[in-house]
Length: 254
Image: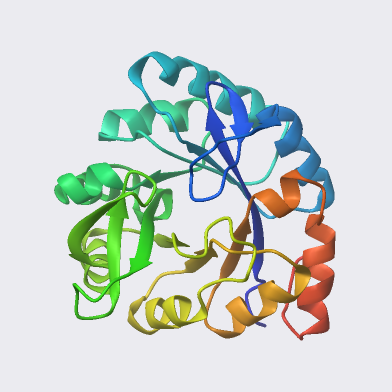
């Protein structure tokens, strides 16, 4: 039996509230993260992802509180990313109820962080989050960015994903900065290239705008599909997405 494709609402959290802009700029307040996560749980979400998009030191306490309150109400895997800089940060997040932790810029700055987290907690806890955009500066045509896509690194996205998997990343969250917030569909070429090089699950992120956009991402190689604004605005429910996937012969959990 095929493994069911997961549908994952993503909540970008700033100062304890859910926000969502286009390309991480012009952030708009979308509501209470615990309430939204609970609503998605009731809709049939397979997992929830929180990204702390401010992640300054003074606001970390707010994030831990949000995670803890969510974990008390939502009984599906919870991934938390944003501002994770050490294995101790991971320990604290797991301690308040996170199931998995996403790392991004800190791992780029210090790749050994991936080894440290995987060695201490296991690969199943560690999601490598990649904010990727098209660029002719690297061989694959896809470069890793930081700061919500505003800063390009010199890292080839495929090479970095491959290295991180070797170091112990258990999953790739591949976010297309070009597609993010546009609602014009996932970057299928990026998903397909990541699938080719990855021995771990690939989560496609960035660009979902209608129910028709999800199945192509799965057919391109995504093991899970992630979206934010289409869910937060009420345009789509998790059930709508699962029905559309099932209609395209993609196995989903009821």
